[in-house]
Image (cartoon, rainbow, N blue to C red; front, side):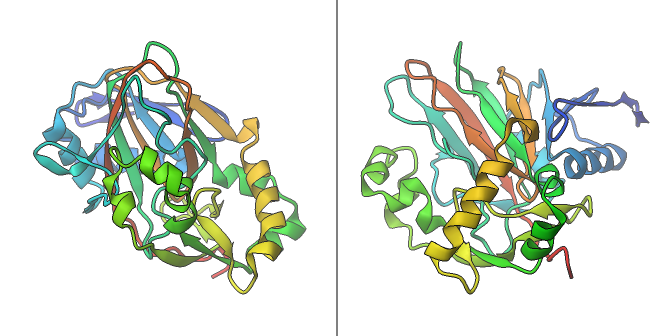
Amino acid sequence: MHCDGYTINIARTAPSVGADITGVDLSKPISDAVFDDIRRALGEFGVVLFRDQNIDSNAHLAFARRFGDININRFFQSVKGYPEIAYVAREPDQVGSTGWYWHTDHSYDQAPAMGSIFAAREIPAVGGDTLFAGMAAAYEALSDGLKSTLESLFAWHTDLVCPEVSDPTLQAVFADRQPGLQTNKGTRSKHPVVIRHPISGKKVLYVNPGFTERFYGWTQAESKPLLDFLYAHAGQPQFTYRHRWKEGDVAFWDNRATWHCALDDCFGYRRELHRITVEGVPLEAASA
């Protein structure tokens, strides 16, 4: 497609989630037409990827602000001089990668984050890939009976159940990279288990292993078997895409439509990504 002098191409990276967008230079302001195409692609594919970009922190912020207000992350250190940009790095001798488990950023907030925009600054020679899973495809593959049951449910999400917060030992391990863990008081929100996606209109499964605590009105013990089934179902290979980072990559994923996890397999290498989180809106039940 042609937009304001650009020839934009959008190509799937995997059947269920992800698309490459070429023909856009994010170091320059984007027009309304280009913005609309990127937003539609984000809603349709869950993750959009821009290769070989040469963007500084100002351009990173300018691109993010086209999509909404910026959420200043309370857990991570920020890039020097840019409080809106989280510094997500792993040094060669550090133990563990941040977000090594399947999760959805900010599902514990009342209005969960729209998206996360990561710019790759330094990438290991091997390892450090990120996995994505598409929750619209995962929902569609469920039986009609289970879909009907899930559409009537709500679930509690909280940052108090993720490993770095719930395990004091891990709090200490990640203290330098995520100083906010030490003072975190916890946030809890209730969301529909099946949402109507704000951009695509698709029905999307909205629970995740990192931050979903239990179903509303159910105990944790009662919730666990069904949640475990949904986690095993949604994490199957047919719903996922594995992204091999290269320096200059910019990845923008929709937190309402995807899970992601950073593979913890790059010990001995340095990995540095810069993250901007775009604010979202309260979520509506698919059955509403």
